[in-house]
Structure formats: C-alpha cells, structure tokens
Amino acid sequence: MINKPPPIICVSVYDELISKLRYNIIDNCCRETVANYCKEVRELGLRIEEYISESLGLEKDYLRNALGEQGQHMAVNYYPPCPQPELTYGLPGHTDPNALTILLQDLHVAGLQVLKDGKWLAVNPIPDAFVINIGDQLQVCNKLLIYDKYTQH
Image 1 (cartoon, rainbow, N blue to C red):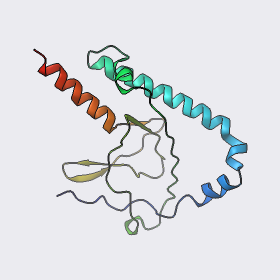
Image 2 (tube, one colour):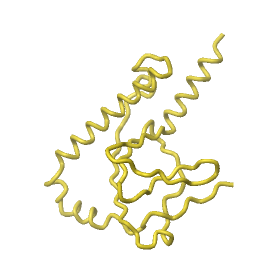
Image 3 (cartoon, rainbow, N blue to C red):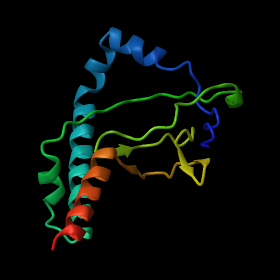
Image 4 (tube, rainbow, N blue to C red):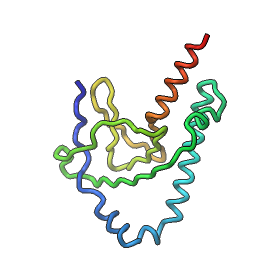
C-alpha cells in the first residue's frame, strides 16, 4: 500500500500571477526573457537526450529520432510559504507523461517529493541546479530498446 504524500503545499496560489496575466503586465515586462529561458531549457533537454543516448551506447540522436518532434510545455507554479503546511494538501503522486521534465525548484519551498520504499521523501532544493525527471515517454522508449536489444537473435 502506498502512503499518501504528506500535505506540504499551500492551496491558495496563482492569484497574483493570474491578475498580472489578465492585465498583460507579464506580456509587457518579460516576454523576451521567458522566450529566451524556454529556448535555453529546450536546448538543455535536447543535450540531455543526446547524453542519455550515448550512455546507452547508441548514436547521440537516437532518442531524438525515436521520440520524434517533441513539443514543449512551460508551467510556472507559485507556492507561497505556509504558516501551517501540515493543514494543506499537495499534489497527488504522479509520473510525468513527457520525455523529460526540467524543474527549477524554489529555494525557499521544498515541494518536490519522490516515492522511495513506500515513503515520500522531500527533495531539498540545490541552488543553481535543475532537477531532471525521466518521464513516461523516455521510460517506454528505454524499455523497448532493452527489449529489442536482448531479444534479437
């Protein structure tokens, strides 16, 4: 039986961001910065796919070719510190459906958790570092590769 993750994330979020979006403040103040950030993170993801391919003894473009053209989704979540985090609910346990998730954690709110041996453990943020999650698409691709590699005669 899997334990539910401890409730550590405040529920009342997005208000300030939503109001800024409604009034196009974000559009006017940081469109170029966000676009550049997205471009750089995409390039990082493509390089990571190459490194994973090479670490498996494959051509560096193997995963890119196997996965095909990938879209990109950027989510910005704001979780303010909670005075009583034990009274809030976090997100339910899940896997990421994409190939890779590149996460820049807030240094002040440790919201990311991983399930290990039936227990949820906090992933403490590290300054100037990304967390790279292997998503479902890459897991499936890797399983097919292993199946392929070991069933050929």
